[in-house]
Length: 294
Image (cartoon, rainbow, N blue to C red):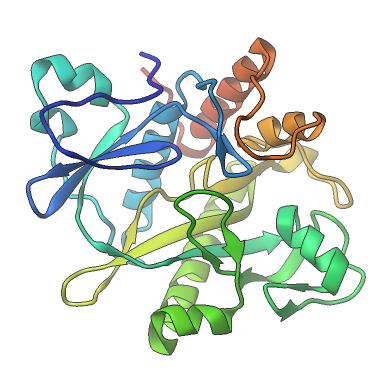
């Protein structure tokens, strides 16, 4: 079932992100439905990607389970199909999770292990990423000696903006900012080591965190998916060029060839780009987890 937007009538919808639709389940839980929408340059495209939502949901579930020894996560274990009606079950099947309702932090926790994307552009201009001084002479897609934490502000609409660690401290406090940084880097390192054994380089990723009423840190949203991360096949990785990608970078690269100012409305995607993107998402899932969609 291709799903651009869920339409669940028996639960109050409390949010609609670029990809996910969020519904209240009582006062302390939420149903998150991962659609097949795709955003590029923070603009939601009008063409859905077949199987994308199911791939993202399966991938996030895999990582939540694998990394739960590092930090608690949002999962409740409640079956999503148990909180909707029989008629609504097809909308949530294989693409949803019931999670704890938490207070989200107002930053995105970005970790970069390689220099690419907006980080590469910043480095070319200033020699820094988010205020972090980097060695001279780095080349595009080069691995950094150690992963760096480069937070960003979360935008409900429009573009997220990179900020310095000092700015993150102002937003959430010094102690919490340090905990988020250290936890994020640990999550990234463990995931990157695992992925490398599966032939995938995780060049960078973003995490999101929330707080419980007692101010415990919890991993929320999605984690290490092909939407929140840059996945490269290790066997075709070369320093000095933007490697082929298992994530939505394929769509970004196509859009970069067009005369588009990266503001809505986005151009329509050709059928071959849609099909290739869907294939890349599914391949990333199988390589990383050994799982295939039913």
